[in-house]
Amino acid sequence: MPNCCCNFHFYHRQFCLKAYGSLTDNFKVLFSAEATTYSSVLNKCANFCRGDRRCIGMELCTIREDLYRCRVCCEWLRLTEKTSLFKDSKECKYMEMNEERTSNVAVNKPATIISVFKPDYQFASNAVDNVTVCPNGLSNAHTRFEFNPWVEIDLQNTFDVLKVLIFNRQDQSGNRLHDLSINIVENGTEHLCGFFEGPGVTGGRLLLFCTSGSRGRYVKLMIQSRPGEKDFLHVCEIQVFVAQ
Image (cartoon, rainbow, N blue to C red; front, side, top):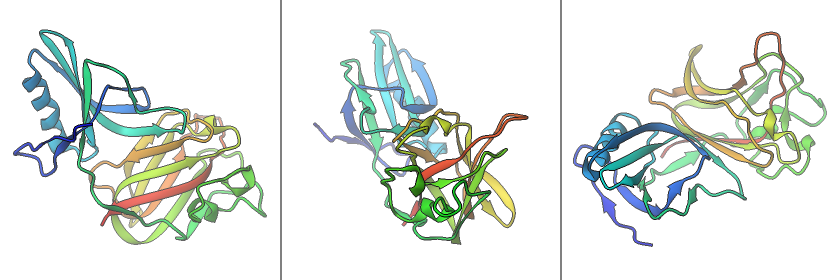
C-alpha cells in the first residue's frame, strides 16, 4: 500500500495514507464536512485538526462527481479482534496522522476503587498490573453494585494525558461498560478527557482520546448512573498514555 504523506503548512504533523476504504462504525466522529471540490473538503477537515489534538486522521470520500465528504477521527475507537476499523470502498480513503511517541505510565501505580465485589480477588490494582488477558472475572478490577461506580489511578506525577486504553471484561457482561466518563484530576479539579456512551462489548478494547488540557496526576473512570439506578464497573486493564 502506498504511504504517501501530505504536509499542511499550518499543522505540525503529517497526514499519511493509511488505507483505501471507508471507516466502519467502530469510532466516534469528531467533525464532518461536505464540499463541492476535493481540495475544499480536505482543507475543512485539516483546519479542524489544527485546533483539536484528538484528530488522528481523516476519511475522505467521493459522494458524487460534484460532492465530497470528510470525517475526522475520533473521540474514541472501539477495537476488537473480530472487527476492523475499515471496510472496502473505492470511493473513500483514510489518511492518518504520523503517530506521536507515547508511553503507558499507569503500570503498577496506586489505584483505588469505590468498592470491591470479591474482596479477596477483584482489587483496583488488577486494573494496572500490566496483565491484559483476564480469562475470568476474578482477575478484573470490579466494583459492587453502586451509584456512579469509579476507579482512580494515581500517576504519582502530573502529566498531559493524550489517550486512555481500556481492556474490557473478557468472559462476560462487556455491555456493562457504558456512560463512562474519564476525568483527569489535579488539585481537586477534574477535567473531562472523554466520554463513551457505549455499550462496550465483551473482550473489546476501547481507546479514548483526551481533549486539550487533560493535565493532572489522577485518572478517574466513572460510570454515570441514571438517577435512582446502580451499575457495576469492571475492567481488565487500564493504560494511560502520555507524550514521551
